[in-house]
Every structure is written in structure tokens, then in C-alpha cells.
Length: 112
Length: 116
Image (cartoon, rainbow over all chains, first blue to last red; front, side, top):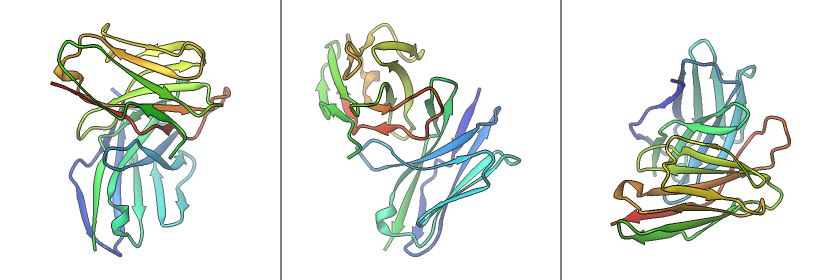
């Protein structure tokens, strides 16, 4: 089956450090991957999309990379802040329906 | 606030009861999606509409579940004879699909269902 895999262990880092989250995919080559942020009790909020022909994409303190050889996307938050604490979801879009297939998410905790 | 609203935000019901949730997408968005999310997991696709037509249903959507979007605007998701396994967050999302790939889905805040 076509899977999106994220590290289910929470990532706990010190404020100011760079957080790096991993998204791996198997058995297919997505045209693009999306990253969402989800706070407790809320719906996901779109952050970034990266296409397979893009190596890297940036938005303010966020950076996403896409390595089609490793079948992996990395999501970085530089100069992390406690307000960045949330669950981050990786997703791919499926066929002409554009329904999203999500990973299980990685919870990030930034300590002050 | 993404502009997608869901009602109610929380619902507690007893096993065997029927529940109905409502989603109001962003007004110009013609595609609407329903997802279900359990604790510690990512959202899972249930079904989607283009305008008023329901185009796909997941295997997760048993015959106790029914969704409608009668006028191509708001949508309802009904669960009949609820079971404890139905306890989850039900999320709605919408996109302004125009026949080409789109970049993002706009999610509502979700309806948290607890079945006792």
C-alpha cells in the first residue's frame, strides 16, 4: 500500500534550536508533499507544499526538502519558539480526487 | 480561522443513538471532504463531494454513515446506531477545485464525538 510514515515519537527541543521532522513514503512517488500544523482540538492548518522537482522550499523560519532518491521529506523549523509546539502532519494528495493521505504526525515540544 | 465552520464542536452520545454533524465550507469552494481522526493518528479520508455530487466513499464509511451536500453548499454527516469505535474527531475540509491540481485544503475546527 502507499504509505506516509512519520516518527511517532515526540520531538523535545530547546527554544532557539532547529527542529527537524521526517516524512518517509513507500511504494509510490508523489508529485508533491504537503505539511500541516495541528494544535490540540483544532483542525490541521496548511504550512508548505513541495513538488518533486523542487529540492527545497522556504517560508519564514520554515524549510522543507524533498529527496526522491531517499523517498523522504524533511521539515525544519529554525530558531524554534515555544509557540511552535504542535503536531506536524505530512500528507500526499491522491489521484483526481485530491483527497489527502496523512502520516500519523510528529508532536513537537519546544522548551523555553 | 480558515473560514470553514463545523457544528457542533463537541458531541457526547450514548451507544445506539444517531448523530448528525454539519460543515459549512468556504462559500466559493466546490469540493468538500470529510475525514476522521483518532487519537495519535493523522486524519483518514471518509468521503468527498464536488458540488452536490458525492464522488467517492472510503471503505471506512460503513452503511451506518451517510453524508449529503444537497445544494452544493453545506454538508451533513450522519452516523446511525453509534458505536464506541465511532468516537473520534470528524474533520471537514474544502477546496476551490477548478480542474487542475490544488495546493491546499482548508480544514474546519472539527467535531469531537464521544460515544459512551
